[in-house]
Length: 301
Ligand SMILES: NC(=O)c1ccc[n+]([C@@H]2O[C@H](COP(=O)([O-])OP(=O)(O)OC[C@H]3O[C@@H](n4cnc5c(N)ncnc54)[C@H](OP(=O)(O)O)[C@@H]3O)[C@@H](O)[C@H]2O)c1
Image 1 (tube, rainbow, N blue to C red):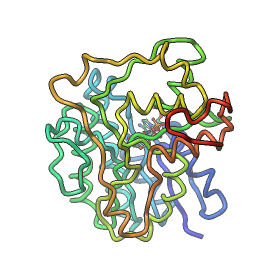
Image 2: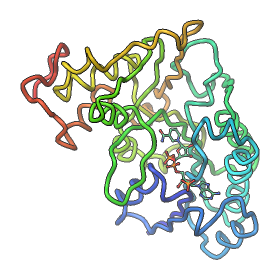
Image 3: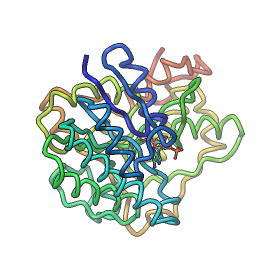
């Protein structure tokens, strides 16, 4: 059985990933407490002792505002930490998967979807960190997959951690009767975390290189919230809760969607964001008003 070292293993994606493939690999799950990736000596000692077949490097500070406010901390973790892990992986001949992000394109002015070889021009510390880490890692280790994710969504689960995502944030707003402000000029891929996870194992079969992973999406952020509410049978709440944000992205629409056709050529394919939202709603039995589910999109359950 192949041995996998997972860094940042208590995070939103990683913990679910390791649970999903629990019986298929020998997992060594670490987070800050077990293996602080900024502690270079510990990283080298840990890998020397463990000698994993693969390292999935998920550890990061992925909160954009925090990174902008604490650029030195962000760089230490997102760039130097990744370099430490890559150099140690190389030393023990482990293959490495580095999790990167659509945010490497967040300063580009031309619209997405972006391909892997498009020039990335990030304008946030987080996006810049990930791109810089990608560049360093390519120099350090040949047996490397760089996987750039779209934004993912999912629900809180027992003993799993959560991050901010449009799906859950929308439900919380409905529960709290709070307005949801969303722009019709913002476009992002949004991928159900379990769709990402179910495809993820295929990374090991891909030629080394950079890949975009995640759902294609034709909806703006505003339309995605509207779609979610309708599909859950809460379409009648949209009129009172959903507010168009007309200020954001007025000068230039925000479109950081990823073109995932390279991965698709190798058999890695994802549901569209609409299909993924429906699957997630079904997985969690979230059709709240069955009579009204589907709304103008005509979905029946
Ligand atoms: N979620 C998404 O939609 C998304 C989209 C694109 C890319 N990604 C990338 O995918 C990866 C996983 O994302 P995620 O959403 O699962 O993130 P997450 O929940 O924030 O998980 C990251 C984990 O890394 C840990 N960590 C932070 N500093 C560390 C250190 N010095 N040493 C070891 N571990 C450390 C974090 O601990 P603390 O929480 O205690 O800081 C956290 O448990 C990240 O690399 C992220 O950049 C995620």
